[in-house]
Image 1: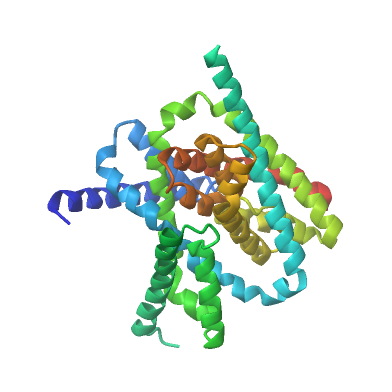
Image 2 (image 1 turned 30 degrees about the horizontal axis):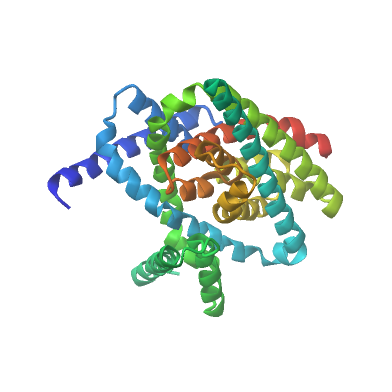
Length: 125
Length: 230
């Protein structure tokens, strides 16, 4: 890693930590959204208000997105704790969750695709 | 028991190596069902069970991953920022579509679960499955659900969107990255968002947006809809 990219990563770490810390502050006062979601909105706001330099964030964010999947693994392994619940309701419950997730995906996808198609038709005319 | 540094390094490495192995395999074989997250669970759970390692012991050393999820979610703010100009004009429509979709599915979930299992507490948990974990768990407590079932359902909902989300949407002619991102962020929270963000910034932005807006909508709507069934 060269010096410039190291500095960019350090800058990103600082900005993200600061956003998250502020997110925790807001969460302590308004316990409505989790701190991480407040932090995410704050970062968007900071970039929009040109308080944060987007060019310095790019490489770090790409790296984070590429690897963030691994962060879900330990929590997911927690399924093993709930053998009893799974034995009793597992099959029906799993099917219900799968079907309703697919339905939600399709409802939102179809509604928004329809809206986009309408807008495109208007623009084309 | 004392925390052993060797255990700590072992469990962290085990998690990273397992996950990475499936990332490499998926990149090579291009099989959708080879989802690294799900495959890691299928490998790690038997490894732990067969060696009589309790989940507490494993989680004690690997909870840093769960904590790192917070800055990772914050980083999605960058993706949202990049698409802000295209999103701005659509916000009202997005809000209406997400509100109606989430309310509808919540009603269906409550009715179906109560009809099939005759358990209000399980129905509450199933109805909160599409929202991000901290909000899902807070609402579960507030509305009288079962935390463990909510947690498991949230993971399943995430995996479903991550594995089948895109092929399912494409099959129904939903080909626009904006619509795909919105649907997956709404139904499969941060796990779905992490998966589609790799495809394009447009996917990532709409998915991140849906993640936040759905969380707000669910927190507002569920106390109105769910207690109605108790």
